[in-house]
Length: 158
Length: 206
Ligand code: SF4
Image 1 (cartoon, each protein chain N blue to C red):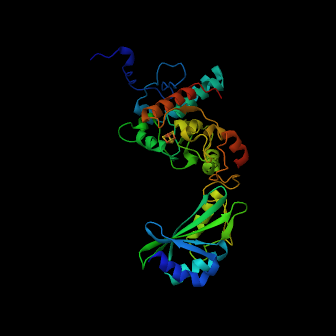
Image 2: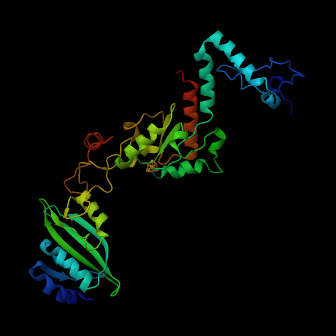
Image 3: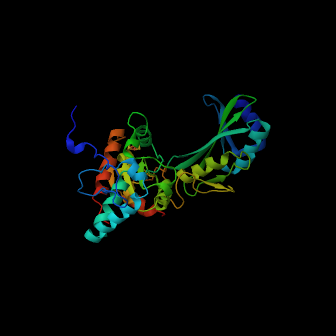
């Protein structure tokens, strides 16, 4: 599958929520979309294009905005594809993909925990790797390495 | 090879009269653990005789002086550490119980249940996520209990001291008796730590 084909098959469904498809080494292409069209895009990609496996969900803090990306795999085409969207830095949120690909559940919990992106309608959005009550999103660029004592006071739950 | 007379085992009495089996108890200040013939141990008189001897000693010297050394002697020779591993130091912990270092010759036998343990060797990086589980395990161990912080991570956070997820030293959570430096400490260092702990227990007063 080529980026042009992805573009041709997605754009009728997504309309202006599709921002473009660019080539990306090792994949069928990198689909840029607006968060408003997230659910529609996920369904199209899974059901019409055959990317039935969600390999990972990740999030990046670019300081002025946050990016959330999804890596999906098609067994028929034997190819990956990247779906990526930009979110506003204040209160970033996007629709959860866990209703479409259940494997998104823990990945989204991790992305929320470390980069602070909220996934709407996620069934169980709570800490995955840090203890409950942990007060920080530690992979944000604004997170400073704390003196151990400060971390302890803010996060200790015993 | 000649053996000094003082170290040869005493010749067993031909036929000890009932109730007068010579019993010496291991005491602080006593020259060595006394040698007791296995027949003596098996004989029906041993336990009453031991009780009598103990009773005399307690009446003479007070309970603390007599019982405490016995407990300390027994405790320090049968330290049972909790069998768990947190990070890379656990590999050295495991190696110490292998054939080459054989920690069991010191009476150190890892047990899988905290209820059977009196020693917790914290062998690895303690994260905030595992912190309250560690405290639960510690509280499940019966008294008296000891803690060894093994490696730089457990001692002070080690290379991850400023990381967002690491407890900077397990002594923030539970009291620690012996710290072992190293990243990771070799099994010899771990055994040295255990022997130092045994010395601490020897001095224990209450
Ligand atoms: S002290 Fe070193 S070897 Fe031990 S757990 Fe920490 S990093 Fe691993």
